[in-house]
Image (tube, rainbow, N blue to C red; front, side, top):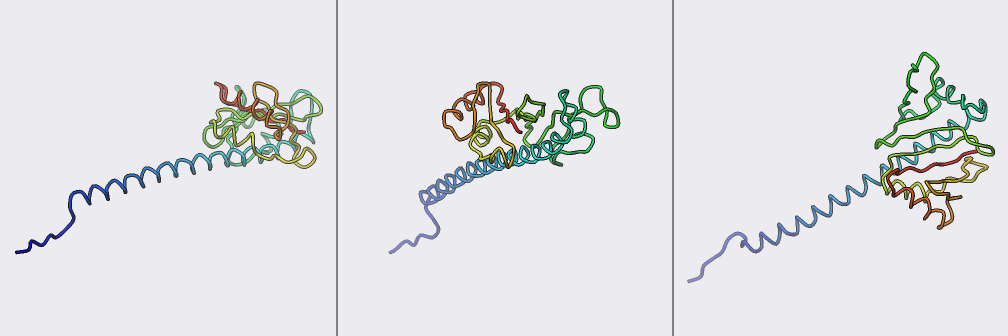
Length: 185
């Protein structure tokens, strides 16, 4: 007499569950990588937009006391994705001097006057390590087209093409500050 088996054995079910588990873990890590890459790209977009808008205002209203930031704030010459942090004691209807902005992923941006030949510096703080490396390896364009001059961290790193400069700025970015400063003309 022959016994007929119906269904699956326990061993087969455990094998299927193991395969599904491995695929699920791989899917979660892929989603995490895509999310952090998306955040890094958003930071690049925010910096590019902010730098382009501030550059226009800085050229028209540059002064040694940095008052062009009043025009940036009053004219809302910054991207919609950024929120202006008003200077303490100032209101939007009063003398507005927002030199600090908060963007996506809690990254904060500070804009300040710079010494000649630069017009201004833009400092991005609260960056993750991946954001720092993405910013360091991004092609910011030439000085004549985008105004980008150099990127620095705690240590001087002139230009973004040199691997030595990238290593120096990456060292400062992996510290406690997690910030980079971009200089624009």
